[in-house]
Length: 170
Image 1: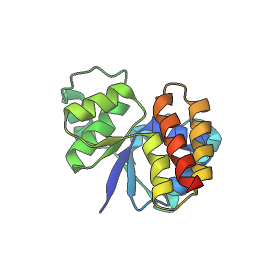
Image 2: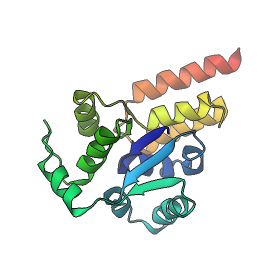
Image 3: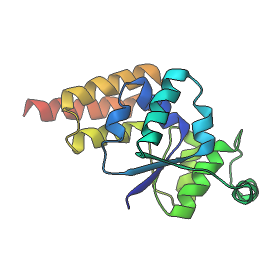
Image 4: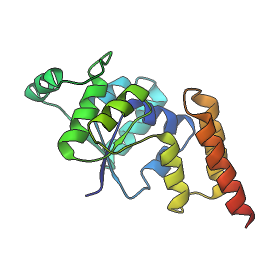
């Protein structure tokens, strides 16, 4: 299995740029927790996520009461507003698999725990690297991502866009 645990932020980014089907085209077993799914409230986003759950392309771990208790006791260096981020961190740690997150605090906590961690920019690069989309489409998605999520490192997006432009011109 090629598991990867995803947080809410990555779903919001990928849905917002219209690339959710591409996410599930990657050769990854994408999973999340029921706490993440409950955070997706907008009906259009919820419908899209639920379609991938029904088609069994998105694995949702429904946490038991004892797992929730364990997560609440799970000590982290950083404090999180709610339990949702801790659920994906804990699950990635338990499964010994990478974590996809758009949250800096969660990313840093994962790094401290030696969990491989990636974000939305990495996802788009994977689309290009795996031939799911073309470089011009990758540039378009990166530009849209930069517009919808101002918290992302724009210099990293610009660098990747420049690389795609150079490679495209060869």
